[in-house]
Length: 491
Image (cartoon, rainbow, N blue to C red; front, side, top):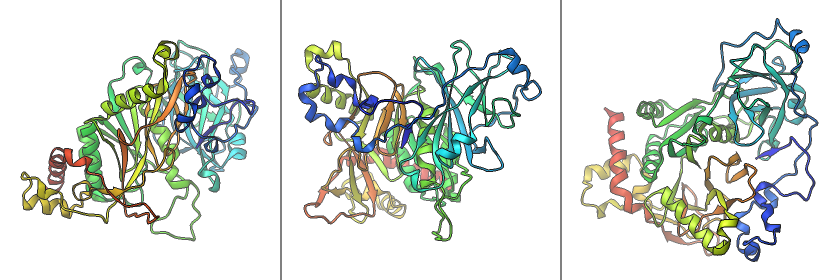
């Protein structure tokens, strides 16, 4: 998970998610601390921040810049959405994919999504950040600050990072950035900086969905269409897919949705060894699971502000409202439910909590537990049933789940409020902006659940077959949409 390593703090300081208000005498949650522990990020999921002596320093001396005149021509050809080597390029130790502007806090910063060979490598390989402005002849050069991903990636050669570059000018915004080992050196690769600040006050849409990278020649067309159409039914406006490798049929389906304008497909051309397909023990895996965490955090910054909420889930998962017809209604109910339990009415005005992340608990739906639910619907004839059976539409034939519902942080997925979220992991948000009353809560199972379709049965005692038929209510609506897409692909 991404851990901030840019500044020192005392061991007894709490992370933003641990909310300093718990110490306040006026804190309305103090009496209910035992009931809200599942809403706080447990200590075992946090690592102590490390410290690198990389203070922010602006070089504004004209003599210093003039020394570098022959190297500092303004960039015209910019890189975006592609893994490119930076720093000491001969060593191929550090690669950058994309760059973003974040103006949500007092210190503005450019964030670069990167992978590198660990702390020793990136601290030596990338030290300086060149920020290029349209209205300035020369770049501003600052020391790079880093944040590392050292949870899953610690066992592999490469890890994911954010390289952060701060600047002081609140008027101008840089349009390009480059990284270097030296404060004055030739710059070969310039990355376009994406800026969503325009949407700071007016998000265009409600929900964007971020999906774990597609890999191993993924070619399950019916699963892709099923996931997209059901999520659209619940309120999804947009999807971001990271394509490492897919089959020809799957590519056709992606092209179809791209033409509709509801998905973005990004080439995830990782320059290091990933999990081989088929498996090959002779190949050393150099980064965990196709740099999943780098993709998730890239997706966060690619879509933040433009969309009010960002949904994180996998291809075999669906976030299903249990009481409502949409995600928006589900989140509103979950917020009210949490507030009624934890915020005293007389303290609402002074406390003013903001829920930054909604965590959905996981329940497995084993795909081997199958039944014909279509027989109950007169609008579906035998031909339709046959087509859906051939394409293995999970939600049409699988309505039994395990009785066991996993706790938050264990196999959970989540929905974040994009305006306040700064860092995410696989199963939970990790860091918010510096606002004292931000919370990550676990949605009650009777309000919303994460349905996880998998060849899986946990045979532990007491884990029985349970009915999970909530999707049956929506079956006629989304099955028609699925069939329409399948027919288009066959034509």
